[in-house]
Picture: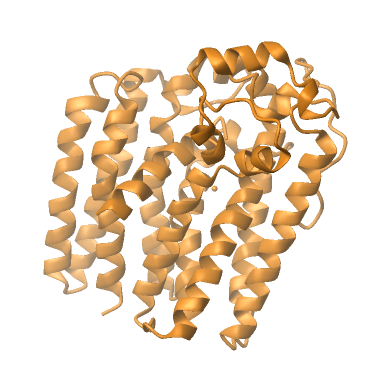
Length: 373
């Protein structure tokens, strides 16, 4: 249960970090030159010692900690150690959801066995999905979000100048190529006739790029961007884990994409805090587009209706016990929605996510186990 709590907390924080910041490779590199925007941000090629002192003061005022810095979450302290700064850019707190997705995919395959070989494969797949490709995604997103961060969190590594532009771009490429390389290794290891894990890693990384980077920048659209984010944290790692040990079937693809709508709802939870910044920068998040009152009902509807639909699918597939278990896990989520989120989505977002999301995460595993039989 502790692992589930850790993973669910990580999902909420990781999607918050990704939003305004998932296993969403790149057929072309991140551009080295960006057109000037209305807001100029000097992510200078300076050493950490030259970082903006005002930014450091702001981080200190917020009670920044080294622990937060290592996890890559808000309230981090200012560091001068470049490796700690690099780690912060990858946001380790966002890795567990991808690891959990791989676990669910392996469970759903029905072919995972507790042998040294299978355990080793799964660990390599988790490293690919977490530190490498999620780290790539988060670093890339911070790179393209430096204008937003200059408004909301100017003390972050890139807008503060704690790490240079060239160092950030190098990190993006190292993580990207490392993740793609591990994906290819897994295909060879699993003796796949078609490099399916490689294709998934390539497609997911491309999704990360178009999510964060112009001209498409999917995150500017509340519907498309949040669904892309949800599928990155739920569908893609599940597919990778299942393809590694079994076969991806059309019904599993549809089922996990349906579950990704719940991921859309989770992403919307984190949109409420940044309404002002999103509006100023032209990001059409759902709270900006529909207003906070309507958006919060869209959010809980996406989360609840998706899970009820999956329970209906399991019931129709002749697995009533799994369907009943999933419905039982939905009930406390609804209760916490009324207790916290629907009252005040900004004030109670952390309490809501910490309380409700462990049940959603357990529901994913229940669904995975159901489809394996």
